[in-house]
Length: 306
Image 1 (tube, rainbow, N blue to C red):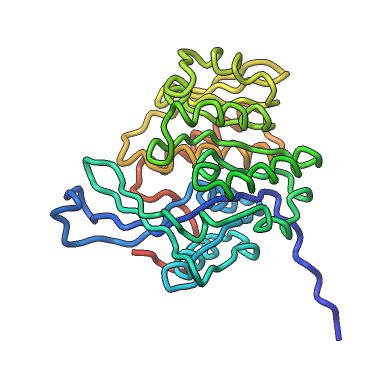
Image 2: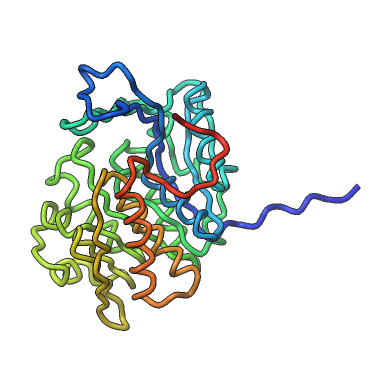
C-alpha cells in the first residue's frame, strides 16, 4: 500500500476571521430591503483567494461555527482554490455575520464568534515557518485577548524563521477606537517584514500627512507600502522609493479593494517581480474589485454564494 505524501506548505498562509455577509441586492437601505443576497467577507481570506487566482498556492487559517453558515463559508473559500486544511470548526460558537446597510456602512454581529475564540493553539500545527509569506492584519488582534495572543505567537514564530511576515494595518473603527488602536497597530507593524497601510488610515491613527511620514514611523519593515486611494501607491525599501500610479477606475464599490491590492503585490513578490511590477499587479487586482460588488473576482468558483 503506497504511503500518502503530505501536501506541500502553500507559499502564502493567511490567518483571520471570515464572516457571512448579508447585503441588499441593490442600494436599498437595510431597513427597507426585501431582497438580499448571501456572500462572505474576510480580509485575510480575500488575500488568499486573490493570490490563488494569480497562480500562487495559498492557505487560509481560521475557525468557523460547526453549523450551516460556517460550512457554507468554508465551502466558498475552498472553491476559490484556497487550501483550508487548517480551518477548525467550533460546536459551541457561531460563525460571525455582518450586514451591509447601503448609505450607512456595515453592522457587525461577530461578538463571541468562533474566530474570536482563536488562541495560539489554533496555529500550533500550522507550518508557518515553511511558508514564504505569512499574512495577518490589524483586525484579528482587536477581536479578543486570545486572538491578540495568537497574533503575538505568529509574529514570534515567523520572525525566527525564513518566512516573511506581511501585515495589513486594516484599522476597523467598529472594533476599537483610533486612540486605542494606534499604539498597538504601530508596534505590530514595526515587527513585520511587509506592511500595507492607507495614507488616510495612517493620518487617522498616527497623524501622518505624507507617505514619507509613514516610513519615518515605520523604519523597521523591509517593505512599507503606502496606498493613497486613486492617486497611487508608494513602496519604501532598502533599494529606495518606488511609486506606481493607480489605474483610473469607475468605482462601483470600494470594499475589498485594499485586500485585492495587497494580494496582487504579494503575488508579484512571490513571482520575483520588481517593486514597480508588484505595485502595478496590486493596482490591477484592486481595479477589478472596484468595478464589482464582490470582494474577489475572477475565481473559478464551484459554489455560488448568491
